[in-house]
Image 1 (cartoon, rainbow, N blue to C red):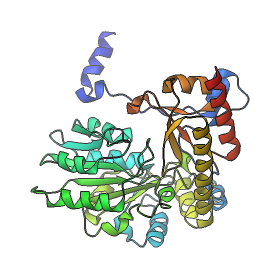
Image 2: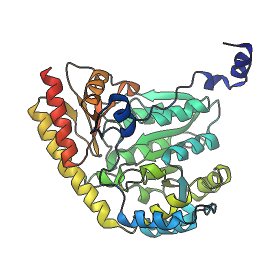
Image 3: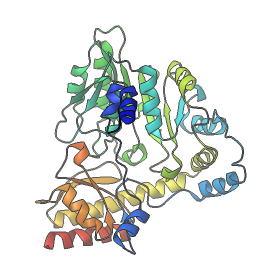
Image 4: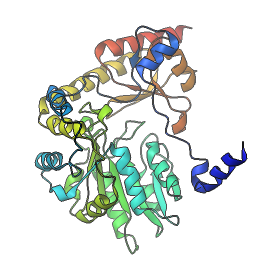
Length: 377
């Protein structure tokens, strides 16, 4: 390394020097180019294979004529539509370029070096990264089986805890905590002898898929009782707008006020605002997406059972599975060469597992066919 590069490295914040980037799934086009494959399906990033609502596409086409203007920095129309749909005040709504950005802004807004952040051991990795970015101590609590141990997470909270992150359903396990478990957790954290309870960030990226479960929590009703609660949702999954990056959430007005002060201006672009707003007008598309995911998930689990492949029952649009005796990385590489992109789970400390998105019927059949070829080798 040259002297100049060393000097630049010394200027970087110490906790960022060894910071590992988030590993995103590879696009279909990249795999086709690298491996010379004509047909490739992507079942790695939990996208909605039905794609966006026609209403969203129409809104994007209309917005394309106005992209030389900056977007509304306050996303007024989108906030009004979210407020109308979920019966909340616009002053309680957070918006970001994906919920990833909201998580990062919350970290920049609240976390100090002396703070602690509590996460679940195999939860979505961006929570841990947010704490590390701000040089916080990240306290990782072991799961109970494949599910968050909320009682243990509550016990991990102390006077230095600034936030607790809970993915519900969790990515990558697909498991969820029930209404009773969550309410017990919130009550336990609130009655602790702390000067101020920590933020409880509920990441509900797969909320719409999980609603088919009767005991899945309806967290919006808890906001008034727990002003330290922050609820995150996204347009990337059920609404099929992953490429536009639109995350949203709900929080106490004070949290939103300070969030608005520090977020980047124009962080939700013009086409994203228009498409997200239009998507909320298409409830039929949401119902179709949930119905297909449930039916195809049932079919996939049946096929995996026939092949004696162990999997974790999921409340989301993906399945975590272990194809023994192979490692997740081996399965990923072998399926890749058969034109199927899945996600190896090494970064989540599940080296023996892969996560597979529930795709279209034809895609799921192609995946099962590829798995059968893999097992026979």
